[in-house]
Image (cartoon, rainbow, N blue to C red; front, side):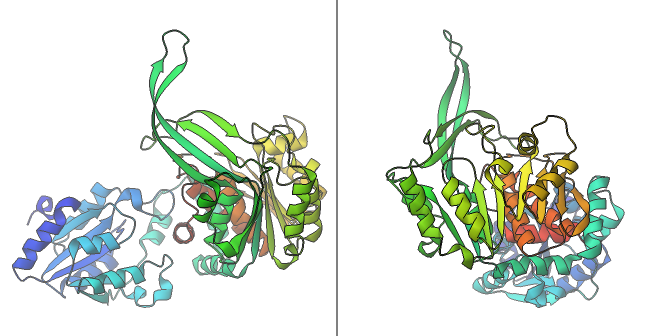
Length: 514
């Protein structure tokens, strides 16, 4: 069999497997990334092949590999070429899905093989092995754990290949020195014990996709054709979704109006026992509508313009007091109160004062946007923040100067707000963090350069950094966690999906494996 005939397209694989079964041949399947084929893989494949007649190796397509930036190191073509060159491998199929379920359903093997390390389900950080087991059982196959010699492709690649820019690898090595993969996983798993209240402005982001037709002939207005609408949870609701991936003990508090569609949208993400949201006829639910062009693969989302639906004035005193009454007896029960202040009326004086006085640990994200520019400044609205994160524009406004040393001003704000942890995110440059019990600042470069949409990246960073801060995690690890979350967020349009715990663990462990 030639290398060319070994490769089977995913769409044709099921039919090919049916033909093999009709010959009464026993099919064995191995699935993985197989980024760098090494002796451990060869032994694994040989032991798997001995369990049947035909060995089919399925690999996760490069667009679906969740091992962090720069992975897979070898593209689909090169990985297929390496596997097809092995005598023991009969067929190779590239799977256009992130997990193995679709691969198993396609091949329907008599035997499905995983490495011996996965016989202990606790070694599976993604939680996908149980899905694999159930799928194999459903199709009438059996699972075998093989591979008498184990190596790590990730360790070999990180040690001997230039996968990432030098500064990023140095940063990861520094984190790994005190937080190896096992410790990193324990830290993330321990977040599940935390009790968290997310309080702040609830926003719905409406993405309206349009096809640009050109300029009108008379007024030179951009003319577009409507394609579709996608409404997504934003603001505090997006952060609630992120936090919920890491701990089940989370609630959300905020203000919305009584528009007919609102409760249906909230119900998609918030269970009744997680809902501390106050509905009021005197409040307009915040909607931010962005008109965008359809996303093109490998390019950042093109945004044309936006329309905001919100009240021009903050809610009245009676509504503010009613919101305070709803929260005041609950706040001391939470390990972390995460304040998401977009300046849209939820975090007015009575609420801010009550939260600052009552919260055991308060993390603050006080954001600047086109509606509140120059008015929603953290050190003018808050006198306390046990941790906080700002972007470059927000720290510039808090400082009041265009030219300044970010580390000096971050330290000044940390002292002014009596903070344990403080961060300034600087987009594609680096994130700078400081901690009251750590003498040296933490500097972490961005972990993802292939940006789809920056909306929500700061919220994702704040979510994980706040969980780390309340847990007292060392500053470099806390910064790394925030950057991992931000790296996921910039690959997603808006807040369409929350930060995935499984992806964060997998990419974090990959980056820390040396």
